[in-house]
Image (tube, rainbow, N blue to C red):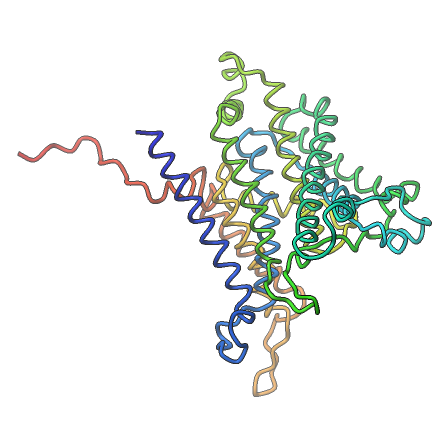
Length: 404
């Protein structure tokens, strides 16, 4: 019975994800499918909406990867920005076309890495038509997987000493690791690889997946579809891990380490596995973030980014994948779109200016909103529940006497 219920739930989730992806494609291509004049202004998607959707897809994967470690395993880590930095740079370094490397690394006389996966596949499959699309997809996919692998490898190395620490000490150690990485990647001696303090650009981004004709006219936009697809696949894998025997071991460690060890769970092994898995998906989200901002630059991956992701996890609910995803889009929409008008001065017809409305006031209001949410939702929006749990029938109250 339970297996049938899980199977039905998995099928429903796949159908819902497919429907969401189809809706995103239609929404992004309204102006392509229909004449621009035939679409009412109210229904026309804005560039701000697409920006929120893209950043939300990227941050949702980062938040879920942090929740895997902080929420499901109980390890308080603040190294998310560092792992995202590793993923972003790995993807960028391996994806810049050889023809553009001299222009990107002009301060260092060229790049120490003189190949890209896309160029490698282009030489085999060609650059025109289907061959070019396959080369782009394969090159980006391999670079993103390697971005996650590099982040996981660094997580393993630093996990050997720091995972012996607990609570605040682990958080401080991982936070220091992220800051050290940011400084190292801006080191001029590594310029031929990381481009020093300068940004790496000219690699494939989300807009590279738009389908165009020979003249460059866009036939089908997929710049929002791509990050959603990658994030959905990665989050689905994380869900499978959480619902496996490894996931149950993670939860046991979170609840009581002594009891988990008494039950035969290898604490060191499972902590390291959780740490490396979280870092892998953080690295993939870092690659997606580099594609979103169209460059890779170390100074962007600050502690503020880690705190933002941690805040999303707390608002959504520690131990809830659905909560992290929903909180991500709410957070990004509020901070990047819905409250933007608060930064602009408004003058009434009488000539009097509305008080407080000026640059920076948006973040004041946003902080108050976050405080209210945290005060009234102590366990976050979802707590430790998932979205399907909201639709389950509640059991009948015990103690009710049967009517004769």
